[in-house]
Image (cartoon, rainbow, N blue to C red; front, side, top):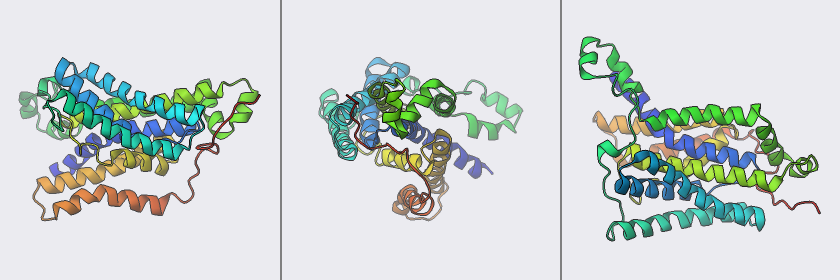
Length: 316
């Protein structure tokens, strides 16, 4: 039973960074801009989060700075795709090259030539929710609480990610701003005739996308692990992109897809911890294999916003 609860716990933990990045992809593409640069934005966010967290000792400020770092890269993507009508895929690929390169450069600059940051002390990491409730004495007095402890004593970034799913669903489908975003993603010319500032909406969506991706990277370096290294993200941005597509470009769909991919990572971690004799290289491949299988088998009938990825020029 504890092994099953452990898989659920690690699923939630490893899903959180994917949820942030996938939500970033959802809002960007609903606004008509394809953002495959999530990987680069997550990487830079992870580096900035770990660096600021190490030097300031304030994980919340570091978490915010990680999001702002992702937003800075998103600004480059927005300028290229919105103002200069650059190909969205080419711009995204450039962001995925710039992000890791800049992260490595900054790491060597701030940490004496090292390709990884120094570890963040445990007390300076983002906190675990309910840690004060599941005390050793209380769990000893009420043994049934141990199962709840395994599942629900998560880093706070997990709960923030789940709340953001609801917030984005509400904004996109229950507010005037969400209606405008979806209109811009489906038919920007029609939206413009109704007085919608298409460029403004696109910028809001892309910058929000970068901020969320940066938060996803920072959640990796400030919660799941305690530092940044070159291989920390290692494809998480691409998995988040796949989750967005599998989820039908909707927040709730992206959530379930991220939980699926997080479960694959959780399973690989749990199998390794309990000593199951499986090649560790095969376990490391498991999340990516599931990603490919899901994309091939389940996304045939999924439709992206009609104007996503198409250049837009304002009517004269």
